[in-house]
Amino acid sequence: MAKAPVRVAVTGAAGQIGYALLFRIASGEMLGKDQPVILQMLELPIDKAQAALKGVMMELEDCAFPLLAGMVGTADPKVAFKDADYALLVGAKPRGPGMERKDLLMENAKIFIEQGKALDAVASRNIKVLVVGNPANTNAWIAMKSAPSLPKENFTAMLRLDHNRALSQLASKTGKPVDSMEKLIVWGNHSPTMYPDYRFATIAGQAAPAAVNDDAWYKNEFIPKVGKRGAAIIEARGVSSAASAANAAIDHMRDWALGTNGKWVTMGVPSDGSYGIPEGTLYGVPVTCVGGKYQRVTGLAIDDFSRQKMDFTLKELQEEQDGVKSMLG
Ligand SMILES: NC(=O)C1=CN([C@@H]2O[C@H](COP(=O)(O)OP(=O)(O)OC[C@H]3O[C@@H](n4cnc5c(N)ncnc54)[C@H](O)[C@@H]3O)[C@@H](O)[C@H]2O)C=CC1
Ligand SMILES: O=C([O-])CC(=O)C(=O)O
Image (cartoon, rainbow, N blue to C red):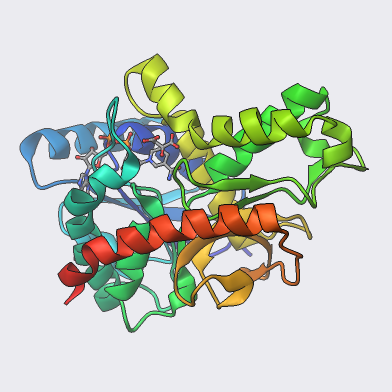
């Protein structure tokens, strides 16, 4: 029997990432080729944004996607999130050259307070929320705090782009394919303080540190390169990454919904207090997914180098949280 459609809300639907994302969701790349979807798209209540959204919806229509069971375009978060099973919170101001993601904090925080409240009021109680808009971890934390009636674990932030970037850098260093890699982690904040950790990773079955065999490259080139890749894209393109960000959002949601078959992936999730990360902090950790739930990989040893890196990115997250606490009421 055909599956019943699920409702997928996407904010910032007429933006760069939205344009790279919606068509892939509607074609079944996110939730499976047998899962019909209803797209509920939110844009700003301004003529230009609403006209652009209308154009995107016309193009979606013109694709005649068999899985696209309905569409809603709106400027009202309570309409966009009504009974939503999934929400991809993309709509926010992106950074330009010379900015850090946390420079967007005050401006974008308001959006995530309003949207957290709207999710709280009207979304499915089982909704899976992915925050893409920057600074993603703290925005996810803000949305979670603004939605007290929804389970905290339903709120996640995107570190998958960082995870994918790290895989590709390791692939080009070792000459091995990305799908031969397992157990990579990106700890912490989606910012240059993030800590890509290859200590437990394997590459084509061999321990990653041995396969790379270049600790100086790992510490002095790989870690900063992955952390600053977003800025390098902005410098090259003049605008921030979009197709790769949409791709990572698809990967994150697909794995959460459909499972990882035991593979580790990185998700920003509210901490359960493990690894010295205070409970509730939205922090990138290794997880596996099964049955529509993520499970943290537990019991990993944290050496001195890792502790220092993990505390550094935590400190930044705590500063971001402190910066917006007064807005949360
Ligand atoms: N977490 C990650 O790995 C990444 C995050 N990003 C972030 O994603 C966000 C979106 O990036 P782009 O699509 O490139 O930006 P964009 O400027 O092309 O599109 C953003 C869209 O959001 C809309 N928007 C703004 N406020 C809104 C609101 N309150 N409700 C609904 N829609 C709203 C705008 O009208 C615009 O159409 C930025 O914050 C960017 O920094 C980008 C790349 C990677
Ligand atoms: O760097 C930015 O501002 C956009 C982003 O988050 C990324 O590409 O990682």
